[in-house]
Image 1 (spheres, rainbow over the protein chains, first blue to last red):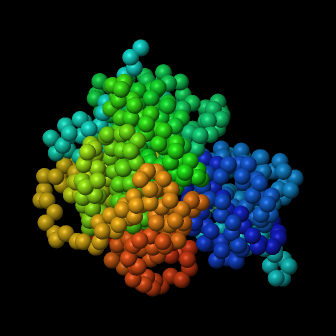
Image 2 (image 1 turned 90 degrees about the vertical axis):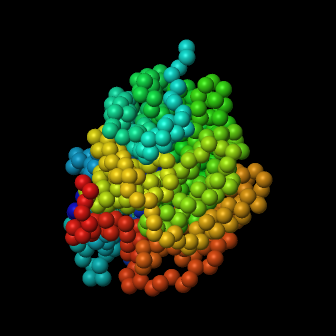
Image 3 (image 1 turned 135 degrees about the vertical axis):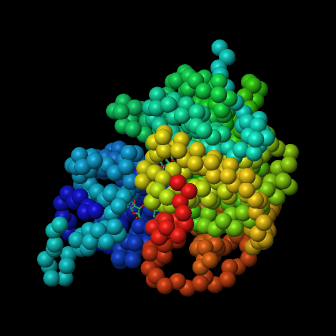
Amino acid sequence: MHPHVRRHLLGDLRRVLLSSVSSDAHTWNLVYLQLLIEELGPEVVNLGACVPDALLISEALRVQPDLIVLSTVNGHGYGDGKRVITALRAHRALRDLPVVIGGKLGVGGPISDTQTDDLLAAGFDAVFGDDAAPESFRRFLDRLVPSPTGGECVP
Amino acid sequence: MTATVTPGIDGFLAEAAKRAALVVQPRMGFSDPNQMLRGLLAVTGANACTIATITLDSYTRVGDYAAVAEAMRTGMPLNGYPLVNLDPAVTRELVAAIAHTGTPVQVRHGSGLPLDIFQAMAGSGLAVTEGGPVSYCLPYSRVPLPLAVDDWARACELLANLADQGARPHLESFGGCMLGQLCPPSLLVAISVLEGLFFRQHGLRSISLSYAQQTDRRQDLEALRAMHRLAGDLLSDMDWHIVLYAYMGVYPRTRSGALDLLGDAAELAVHGGAARLIVKTPAEAFRIPTIEENVAALEYAAAVAEEVARGEPVTERLIDSGIHNEARTLVEAVLDLHPDVGQALCRAFATGVLDVPYCLHPDNAGRSRSYVDASGWLRWSRVGGMPLPRPAPESLRASGSASGDLLAALSYVERRYDRENESARKPSRD
Ligand code: B12
């Protein structure tokens, strides 16, 4: 599936903050994504399961990552994601930081296009469904980094 | 007012045992009480010997009652039943509505700090539940283990005291399901037994020990035997039984693969002497199952179990790969740390005497690792500080990327069952 991307981003990708959302306890997704991202180069700070909004925000301010990756599969992702991105974007220092979310985001299977648009409008830069292949995530990460020739590709 | 109280589990299991029926149970919970009621009625009406389930939502699990309230206000569907936020009268009505069937109802919740939930259960006539200070803390929360141990101790005492009001409290350890997958059997058995001892120390008399189907049937049979033996030795003064979980890791995506895996779980339950089976449905890999999907899975598992029970008992030679010895060594090493089981568990994790592979919880040492070997057995590749034999050097695998290897191990069962079905090597029982 093609990820829904709000805008394209530029910058160096050195440090990624990886996290679950407040209500989600699943961690295999986090363990897997940490390895996947590390293999692409960046250092990963993994906050683990059930991360309260306030903790995610304070860690984002402290770690100053180049990208935040939220991963959640318990079905509350749409609600949890919308709430936390709204809170996060309210901080001036985090307003332009690339933030993406992915996983199993709704209790009735994949979320609707309208819900995806809601999440993008609330401030996510990309929303990945559960069936997002590792390649599509890799391609997305590639786009975050300027290519050596200076030209960047836009989806 | 005398509230209806859900029936106890032991008498129910004894009745089922007389008929040689495997008791089957779903993992079911809905945010809407009417749908929850329909679900409970459907489960009690299924053509199988069932125990009903109320699974709680993830906000309630982490104690975020404001988020539950907000979801209830906006009508956002939750992934379970919000027991604590709902008026206890609503839940009492559910309990009363199925009381005539004599079916026990178990509350499943995954909470590191369960006291609020236990209080709400007590107010709603519910006294059968599951969890444990370790098994509901490490895989389900970021609550510091000592706080979970404290809260669980008080919750156990509250539950045990419900016996004074005519209830028959029962608590199941979720220790046999740690992280759902890739936790070698000896550690699963040890944690279940240790939580059983914790429950006893805090007043419970009726408990169950869980074990989740892993990657190989013969290894699982050995693990279930080890669990019977240890529980027989250490918990003989309790009412206890073993509950088997159909595979708790990444589930097959094909319908027939999912049903074959469930069928194998039912067979394992019968051959391994489990009294109860928690089922999974073909929706598992994708989304929360519907009521109908749950009922179909219950009936399917019960039918397979009945067929297996009528057939030959296992005749193949029993294997001893050392699961019993490893589990006993772990249990004894933990009990040596402190006379109080809760304290002993805290010290065990702090010092790495217990160490769950791939668990990200801050109180887990995180130095152990596991893998699925070439013959499909789940093995230790690193034991960290656990007093276990050092594993043979891990066999080299082709892949190369750590993320790819992890995904391959996580999806070993899924691939095996889906592939068997694609090539139709194994006829589906469907
Ligand atoms: C293992 C497991 C558990 C374990 C988790 C242990 C742990 N600490 O991790 C245990 C048993 C504890 C557990 C508990 C629960 N679980 Co669970 N669990 C699973 C299971 C079986 C496998 C998940 C897994 O490990 N996958 C392996 C990892 C590597 O893959 P993944 O998580 O699917 O993520 C992939 C993609 O989604 C994607 N992805 C994920 N995030 C992101 C992010 C980005 C940016 C990108 C690009 C991609 C991406 O990449 C990954 C690799 O392909 C699934 C069902 C299944 N798939 O078979 C259910 C499942 C996820 N669980 C589910 C639920 C509901 C729960 C519970 C709420 C209990 C309940 N009501 O049943 C609790 C969670 C409590 C809480 N507070 O949240 C539901 C979620 C349904 C939904 N979305 O509506 C599922 C689908 C089962 C079901 N059908 O009901 N679970």
